[in-house]
Amino acid sequence: MRITIEKVLSAISLLTTVACTKEVERVVVQEKAYSWAEVKQLAGSQKNIVQITQDEASLYLQQLGYLGRLMPLPGATQPNRPGYYSAVRQPLQPLPYDLTNRIPMNGRFYLKPVGEDNMTLRAFPTTHIPPDNLPADISLRRLDPTAVRFVNNRASPYFALGAITTNNISLVGYSVAPSDQALHFVLSRLSLESGVPTGPVTVSSRTLTIPLPQALPYTIVAVDDYFLVNVISYGLYKISESGQVQQVLTLPNTAITSFYKHKGVLYAINNSGQRGVFTSSDDAQTWQLRTGIPDYFVLSTFHAVGDSIVGITHGIDNNSLYTLRWQGNTPRVRELKNDGLNQADFTDLAQLGDTVYLSTTSGLFKRPLSAFFENR
Image (tube, rainbow, N blue to C red; front, side, top):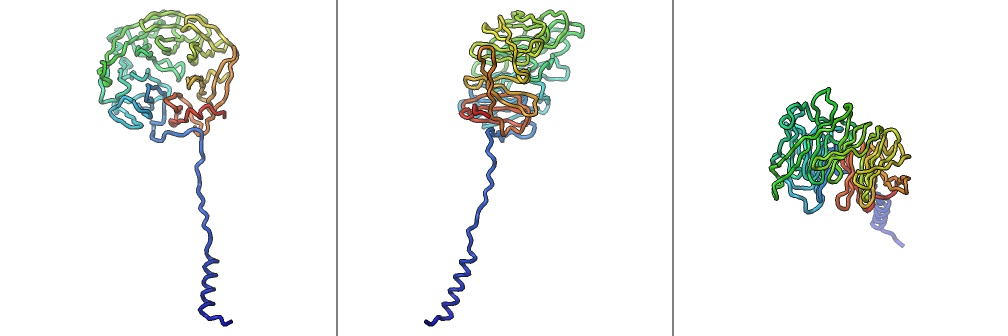
């Protein structure tokens, strides 16, 4: 058979093409999937979160210098800057640039110190940030001419300088003189005109005094419609929204590091004398002590997520999250996943809708409620 030159060249060309054709492999680098995802909209010092509070559809963030708001759910009260996330810093009156300086705050109001002399607290509506609101001042000098300043004892960085109840009554401490040994408080009712979320805010205030044998540091928390004031190494006081004062614990070894309420029982973690937890089933009127708690309980705060209580540790190299339930007087814990949180210091935890949010000193993170309780 005679093979023509054209056929030979055609065959050589085909072989060359086949030899040079190769399947190109595409290498796709996938990012590692973490249990927790960061909320990317925060930037700069907005990632340094001091605390979280909330209403039915929004989270409010006390950040270094900023007030932030996250609105992932429909039905949120529309602010002057609508959107998934917003934050504002007032140039002349920013929020404190201090991670240990928590302000009194809830989903309706927050109180911010103004001026250099610590003599004035300004009450703002939380849902509408400046300048589109009308705040009101709580002037300490007008309430008590002998007053020196509002006081933030900072017995713990996880207690604020005051507290606000569910009915928008606030309690903040102040001092009158270095030699004075009594406790002094300003009790204020905060309100807004019906249907006007921007204000003006209305404030009605009075002072309270609790005599003490010596000056001692204290913390203030709000539980539902009353306050608890723990005077370190002296006892625990219950103060009603109307200003009635009652000492409900008189033990000298009381240093409560955190409170939480679950299924009608109030728990107070104690880090003095007999380390343990005080419990009350009658809204802080009477207490019982359970001893034998783990050391990390006194470095934790506790938060409701669904029907469970979740503890988050603070100030530890590798902070953790865990569920807590009591079997008789014995605590049972189960550690939860914390990968993706960058080993930052945890500051607060909140559930909003079907998502759990964790604030840290370096960002806000979220995790679906459906996966939140997975074991570490």
